[in-house]
Length: 161
Image 1 (cartoon, rainbow, N blue to C red):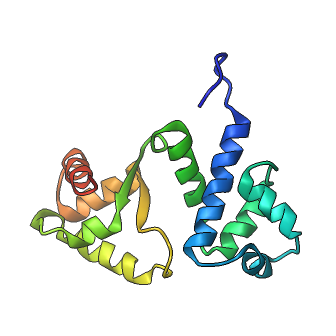
Image 2 (spheres, rainbow, N blue to C red):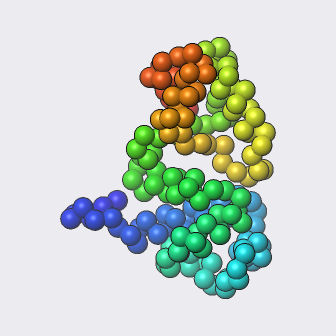
């Protein structure tokens, strides 16, 4: 979402970020008070609420702290916010469902099926089963599957639909 002059609508972006934080907290079944107890530094419940509502800007350090308490890497949260806000995945990234890959019967991606099953097994109970992979990771996976990178991306996009 950009304004007519090409600028980013920072207020809308902050709302999407807050919504993502709130959604992650609720996925874990936590109240704001429970999340606050897990934070490294103390903040008021009102401040946490304003972050979730997107009415207050969150510093990078505070965002990393909140994400750490939620047991999700900050870069994954920002990638989801970017995707929701701009309507696409970050340039050079592919969003994949570990669940879809682990469930595939396609023998051409058998090594990735085992990888996805292992990643799913290691995920915290309420963590997202989606991953964002960049081109170097996709190239390595293609080598592992003995496929051209373009072919692997085509297969993975088909699985994630």
